[in-house]
Image (cartoon, rainbow, N blue to C red):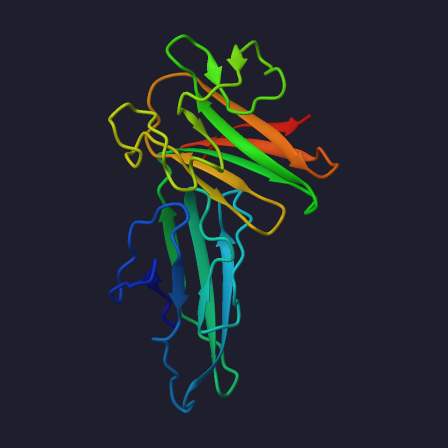
Length: 239
């Protein structure tokens, strides 16, 4: 049994190499280098098993019995993933050698996740850096913001939401760019349950406001999780 990383984001990976990975990388794993030993003549069955993953990752494989497999929603959460594999030959004999891959996803970042339980509901995640005056500026703000943070319905270009961050256009670190390490990016899942995820590699010093706006449906069963360096820093239900 020989397990390998076949490609990352469509780029082939040299045999024997395990590249550095970042959240949301598209990773393909493969057992295509495995060989049967005599008297068997070929490999016949394959099994992939996720044996370790960050607690919030909800990781799943697209094809656990395939020679190649990927991750259903990608490696969204920073941390360490361990994937084991077994290969059976055409006589039904399983491989006995250790066959495993350890994937380390960059955890030097801030991650904010919004998820909910009903596909008929829709929510928008907002992560906003407070301005120099300590105020949060949130476009289309329709309600008071809790926690004593002064907020108003305005747009100072610092609010990261589905309109401004899926294609990065927010400059949090004031370097004149919107794709540098201190700027946020957002990923959304179209399955109907979220999550919406905002991540920042190197958050700039300052205060930030996290908000959720329900834009459709009847349920308020949503939650926000905040991770720093791969560790859960806080979790809140949305009321």
